Length: 221
Image 1 (cartoon, one colour):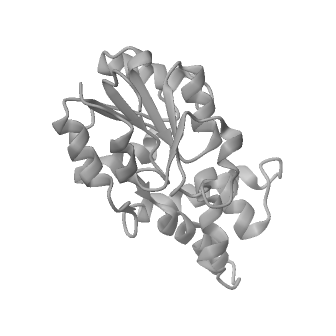
Image 2 (tube, rainbow, N blue to C red):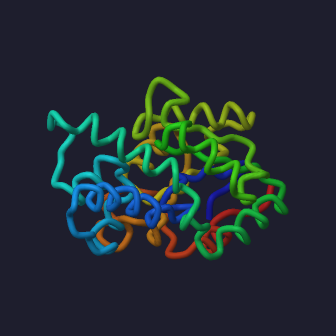
């Protein structure tokens, strides 16, 4: 169990919310607009955490070094903006987890690599985030994860020492960033990469297979 936890920080996509259906829909619309057949959702979901790079790779085999990537990425972003809350939902157990964290007198927040362009409207549209004390996006600081800067910014906004924070995420970069920030780290094995990745190689301090398991790892303030 972690000791003296005063704040819990979370990654967003794949940890608190499942946005893969809307991300996949944005990419698949690009295929349909070009007269291509839709792809099975199962091909998109494992790469949802990688954003445009992952989704465009799945949809078109496109890599960031391709000349068409910037334009295709902006088309993908525009598609996603128009539908980002259509099929996105909070993972089962997350709302109860957040309620329990608040009842225990702890603060909580979000640190995501998603740009503010998307983070702000998405979190504003979902009741879950009304009690969040900090929401830090991928462009809030000069660096995004795996750099520790966004996590340190979130801790500063909450007024909590990084040593009294834990960070929960479903990607190895989350664990790298959390450790670099001096925080306890928890791998969310229920996220996008949990089933396929070797979580033992991430070197997280703990891992959970469901949101509810986190409560067993943190005490009360």
